Length: 303
Length: 325
Image: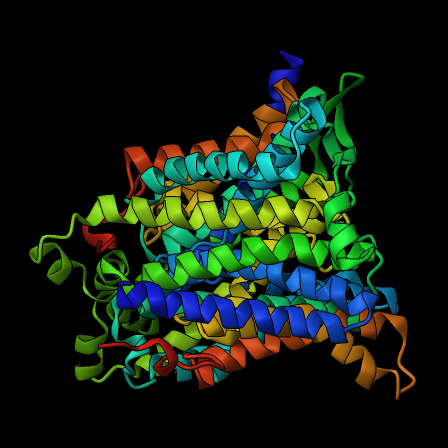
C-alpha cells in the first residue's frame, strides 16, 4: 500500500512536469506545424542562466523569473532567425515534396539542439552541477510517518496548475489567443482576415519556450544540471503529446499524467532500467491503437 | 552488361582505387580515421536511402547499427565464426529488425516518425542492461578485426592494425556502394522517389505504397546493420558505442553532404569524421581551454547543419550529381 501511494504521488508530480513539456510541444505544433526537438535544449540553457544567477548570490525567484523570460526570448529568436526563413523559402526541387518539407524543420531543430548543448558545455563547463529547489524535498510527516509527498511536489503541481490555467485563459479569453487559434486552424485564412501570422507564430514559440523553461526548472532539482540532462524529458514529453493528441493542449496534459504514472509505477514496481522500454511500448501502443491521440482532432495526420 | 550495372561498377572500381591510393599515402592514425569513414559511409548510405530517396526521416539508425553490432559480437564470441561469416548473418538480423520497425513506421510520417525512431534509438541499447547475462550490460562484448591471414601478409607485407581495419572495411563499403548505386538507378529507386515526391500520384501508378515503405526500411536496416557490425569490430560492442548521438551524426553527415546523393553521403561522412582533427589544427594556434576544444566539433557540425538546411538544403554535392533521365 505504501509503495502504491508513493508511486501515485511521484507519478502525479512527475506527470505534471511532463504535461508541461508536452504542452510546450503542442503549442509550437499548433502555431507553426513543427515538432520542436530543441525544446528541452532551450529549457536546459535557461536553467543554466538561472543557476548562474543563483550561484552568484541572487535569490531563487530572481533566477526563476529570468529563466522564464530567457526561455521566451530564446524561443522567439529561434523562430525569427531559423524557422521563419525556412517556412518562407521558395519551393525548390528538393523542398517540393511534402515529406521533405516536414523533415527540414526537424533537422533544423536538431541542429539548434546541438548548438545549444555545445554552447552550454563551452560556457558552463561540462561537469554536472546541482540546482536548488524552492521548497523542501523531504516528505511531510503525518503522525510520525514520513509520507512520500514533499513540499516541492506541492510547488510543482501548484506552478503547473497555474501555468495551465493562465495558458487556457490566454487562448480562450484574449483576442491574441483567438488570433493564435485561428492561425493554428488555417494559416491562409487567418492571414486574409488580417491576423499577423508571423507575430502569432513567434508568440507561440515564446510561450512554449517559457513553459518548457519552467519544466526545466522543476525537473533539475531531482537530477543534476548538465548539457544533456533534459534530453530524456523531451522524448517523454513527445510520447505524452502523441498519447494525448499532438494538436490538443488538454490532451497534452492528460498524456503527461498518463506517462508520468507509467514511468512512476515501472520505477517502483519493476526496475528503473525498464523505463525506456516502457516509454517505447506506450508510444507504439498509442500510435497503433489511436494515432491521432486521445483528444486529438481527426485530420491531424495527412498520410 | 546492363547500363545501370556498368555505371555502378565503374563508380565502385574508381572508389576502391581512390581509397587504396589515399590509404597508401596516409599515416597509421589517418588510415584508422579513413576506416571509420568507410564504416560510417555505409551507415550514412542507409540514411540517404531512407530519408533522401524515400522521404522517411529516421533518427533511429543507431539502434539498427546496434542490432548489427551485437549480432556480430554474439556470433563471434559464442561460436567459432570469423567476422566474414558473422557479418552476413548480422545483416540478416538487422534486416529483420528493420522489417519490424518498418511495419510500425509505414503508418507514420514526418515528425511522428522522427520522434518514434528517436525513442527507439534510446530504448534499444538499454536492452543490453536488461539481459546482462547475454549482452554483458555496460561492459559490452570486446571484439576486433583480429590479424590478417598468412596469405595476405605473404602477398602484401605485414599491415599495421589500422591498415588492416581499412582493408577489412573496404570490400564491405565497396559492396554497399555498388548496391546503393544500382538500387537508386533501378526501378525500386524510382518507385521510392515517387513515394517521397507524391504519395497519391505514386499509388495511382500502381506502386504499393505501404509495402514499398517497408522494403525501404529493410534495405536501409541492412546497410545500418553492416555499418554497425564493422563499427563494433573496432574494439567493443556495448551500449556506449551506439548512443543516440550516433544516429544524429549519421543524419548530419547525410544532410551536410547532400541528402539525395551517394557522393554527398561520402563527402558528409568525411566532413563529420575529420572535423575534430581539422578543428584541432585551427584551435591549437589559439590558447583555448580544453572545454572549448571538446565542444567545438559538436558546435561546428550543428551550426553547419542549420546553415545547410536554411541556405542550401541540397547539401555540398547538390542534387544534380545523381539526377538521371
